[in-house]
Length: 223
Ligand SMILES: [Zn+2]
Image (tube, rainbow, N blue to C red; front, side, top):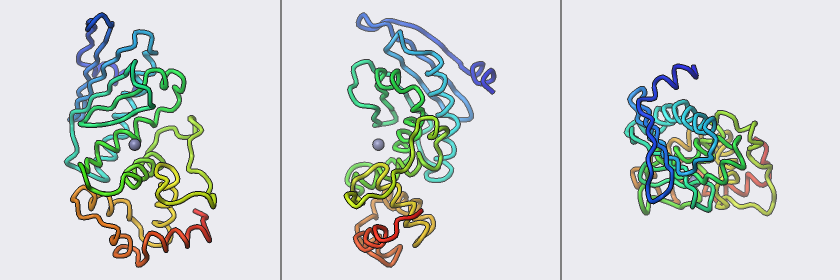
């Protein structure tokens, strides 16, 4: 599997930009093109392979489940200057080289970030907390090694709220699907992409407002 994967690498080049050694990998496989630009010469090459492999495992599944029109051409940038963990925009996922070097097992950062490409909601589609909650919901469902990164949905706490985003929202979504509406995330994801999502859609899809759902969740949060 790994050997085949490496052989499919079409182009490996190294060049210099503005005094920084930078390497670039372009992998075309199964109709997708992944370009990996690495600004950090010390970055572990095995980690780059893991990032690439995770993309080719996870992205087709997310495409199939959520958005068949998602971009086929994606770029990963291993960024030496970026201070966060990772962020995505316009088909480019920026990874902090510092963070990934420190947390090499957190490979499903890929899953969360490429879900943002699949989401492709554009501006003004809905609340940001829901977008981030759906991305972590996808990481929870499709991640290749969440356990290895000690990443899991957190237990419910009374201090939480549905709009905390990320894992808190993701766990709430899992609960709503279990108790009220199977495939709610798939439904909301499409509505967000179509810009037909409003707060009223919670009630339309589940019979309850988001506040009513959260109250019921807080009373019995088992998933
Ligand atoms: Zn995100």
